Length: 223
Ligand SMILES: N[C@@H](CCC(=O)N[C@@H](CS)C(=O)NCC(=O)O)C(=O)O
Image (cartoon, rainbow, N blue to C red):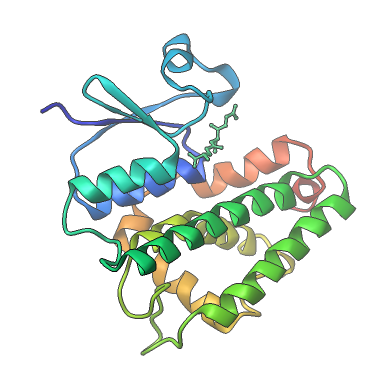
């Protein structure tokens, strides 16, 4: 069977989720980078929403990171999902919550006006408050979504936390995580995983900041 091919934009957090899963599952894969500002025709033909990631598996094309990750999880056992259907459904619901955080993060960094950026920041903070209330207590300085064991849902959050870290490195005013001790421990745990560390190219931290600046957002002027 030929290797699956992941189509990527190197700064995309949704693609990064799939890379983390490919690495977690030790799947051999190819990766093709495209420029979203100049989408090639072959990509537009295979990506129904014109978005990355897409995963090409033989003759088939999968899109939507959550679906790609479920496929990778089912076809490369052991599964990173809980066995119990109710718990599995709960994990899927909280993976959706991670996607909402990514949307807030994009708005926070890319808004042209300070007031719009601040609204998004407040949305992130209110979501952190909810996460802090539902996360279990960390043990020995380690915390995953469900406690001591890593699950698929954790991989949905890691790209978000990585970008929070890139921003925090540009100034304490961009540090939203440290006010939430359990969220902070969760972030530290995820960012220390080899699959997460190796899920982006070395230039991504710098290019992420450059990307924000290049869009003339309010935050871009502060970085
Ligand atoms: N819900 C999608 C979101 C994917 C997404 O928004 N990808 C962005 C890049 S990070 C994209 O391809 N945008 C298309 C564009 O910028 O034209 C998923 O989880 O895969």
